Image (cartoon, rainbow, N blue to C red):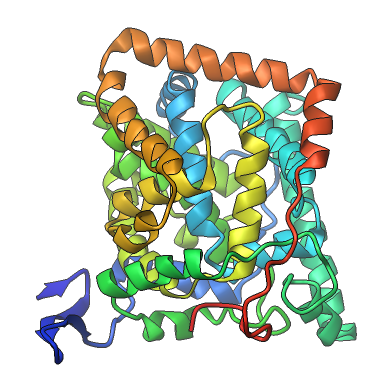
Length: 413
């Protein structure tokens, strides 16, 4: 069977009646060929912050903003689930570890609350109007990216060993980290049963070593666009969006094409340029050729950063959990979590099943969608009041290393 530019063999038998996936070498699909080449190019094009893209359709952009405001609950959940994917990539994860701004529950709580607030302004005002909240937050985000990129580049030249030490939890004395070992290794086993390796794509990405990789490059920025738009555009029903919404989803993709442009993404690497169908094609190819193969080798840094993320989110989004969200995401992207889910407690499984029932069933009712959006906005308002009680809860939640029998082993083999 030939699919998306790569050849895949059928499932074959290998002794004792066990069936294994036989894979041919995976090529980079056409939809991603330009995007993966972005690993060699800095992530900020230098475009003027007050100049909109020349291809901007203002009416479509504003329609996409209105769609985002109306469906913020669904978008927020899809974006959080997408971080499980983005953290699979060292180019996304290592800068977060390096900055130490989201490595504890408290820091993660503060960081992602701030991120949600910034993104909301991009849906509520004009990003190219100097002085608007959207313009100011666009400038802040670009500034953060440029500062992190400069710091990583300077350390790569002056002290590469220190850079490597500070872009992982596994090699240093930093003790606010966790690795559950056998539990998350089941994710690797599930992925191996459902996905082919993708060494050809890994070779193109060149993202293993923070010293030699261009930090926060164009591919990394494109992957960030995917996090905010890919899953919601491709699997809207899984995130509570029902009915004929292609026109609105196309407008939403236009919003993120324009936001990406203003964050410094060049057009050839822009994940959303081309509209809804182009975004869906790139999303499906990203999942098949990049994401499912990456799940075969998840590591302790990935798990820790996600656990502290979900612990922080749970302070103002009740019921959110790493385990339940991972089960739900794996089912969504085509990696049945039979081994991982099989060793979880009943609680996370019940939450995962409830997510499907609520998002794919109950959210078909318009009044429920309205209530869900009002509820998430109310929760954010409460969180933005920065209650001392919530801050203290976040400070008290922490993880320590749970060492595997072989301390030198930092990822599934």
